[in-house]
Amino acid sequence: MDYGLWTIDSKMNSPRLILASKSPRRQELLRLMDIDFRIVLKDVDESYPDNLTPEEVAVYIAAKKAKAFDETLTDEIVLTADTIVCIDDQILGKPTDAPHAVQMLQLLSGRMHRVITGVCLLRDHQYHSFYDVSEVYFGKLSDEEIHNYVEKYQPFDKAGSYGIQERIGLIGIERINGSYTNVVGLPTEKLYKELANFR
Image (cartoon, rainbow, N blue to C red; front, side, top):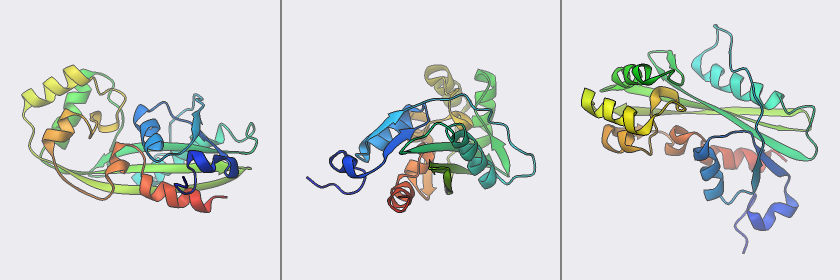
C-alpha cells in the first residue's frame, strides 16, 4: 500500500532518516507519521548567544545539534529539533529540580505562553532550518495541582516543566492557537512538507 513519501513502503526510494533526539515524544510522532528512522545521539552544548530572539534560539540550537553530524554522514538525512517555552520573551528551559518546576508552572498558570520548536535537516553538508510557533493558554492552576503533577510526573526533561499530553495539559490547557504536535515537540504538519522538498 502506498502511504506517500517517507513511509516504510517507500523507504527504498528515500534517504534514510536519522533522528538525533532521545525524546520519546518525538520518536512516537515519527512512528505515527509512518516514517522509517533510526536514532543516533550525540552530546551537544546547547548554549546560545544572548542577543537572539526566542525563535532564533530554537533554530540555532537545532542547527548546532545537526552540525555534530556533518562530518560523519553518508547518504542520510539528520533530523534535529529543539523546543522552548517562552513567556513575556523569557525563555523557560528544562527545570533543574522540583522547586524550579513548580516555579515555572506557577508562572504559566492562568496565562498564555508560546511554544517554539526549531527544526534542522542536514544532508550532504546542506542545512535546512525552520520553526513553528504555537500559543498555549493555561487556565488557573492550584498549587496543589502543580505540586501533585511535579511529584508524580517528574517533568525535568521538558521545557517549561510540562507535557501537554500529560495530566497537567489535559486538565489545565484551555486552548491552543497553532499546531498541537509542535507543543508535543515536533511540528509534524510542517515537517512532512519540508521533508518532501528536501531531496
